[in-house]
Length: 217
Image (cartoon, rainbow, N blue to C red; front, side, top):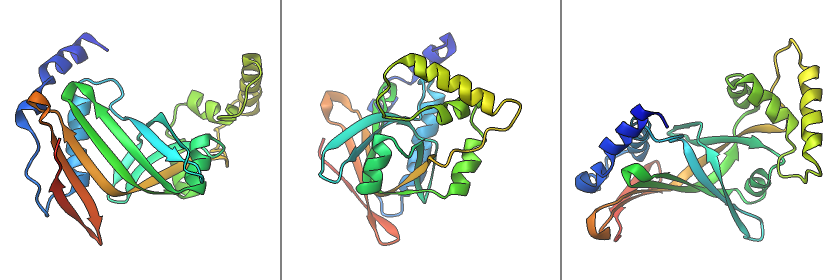
């Protein structure tokens, strides 16, 4: 983190503790509120404010979680990208429910997002893929994500093979890689407060709108 970012973090530390959350109102849009918090997290100087913990479960209900990067969000849902052969992808395909947890420690904030998941379109995945750095594009082709790797030398050799294949060419989006959208059914905003009397504001999907309410800390 740069000196400038560190200063920003110190300045923003504890802001939420004194300000708290707005009142729970039926006309408040949780995606709008998320957008405000996300911008504030970026402005605070936090490293990778888009980092999130993604929790999934197998068909049998065995849970697993890992850190991912939230790449976009809108009223349609929250989008991440991965290799379709990865453990998280396989679990989302066979048990299409998941949750994302954003945690911005310096602001003492968390957002919990729970709902159903679906693959985004091939075209949308390919469009995003072209915005990635070339090294990340090559990496997507190289990795057989979550499979056993006997020796890291094999990874180096596969990288050289893929780099040679696409030398002086655009790297196309792999058919085994793409995005998933989490369509929220519940979104909880958590704001740290003094004496652990935290603010918790819950939005629950109801038809085309949301039911709002507060939770005990």
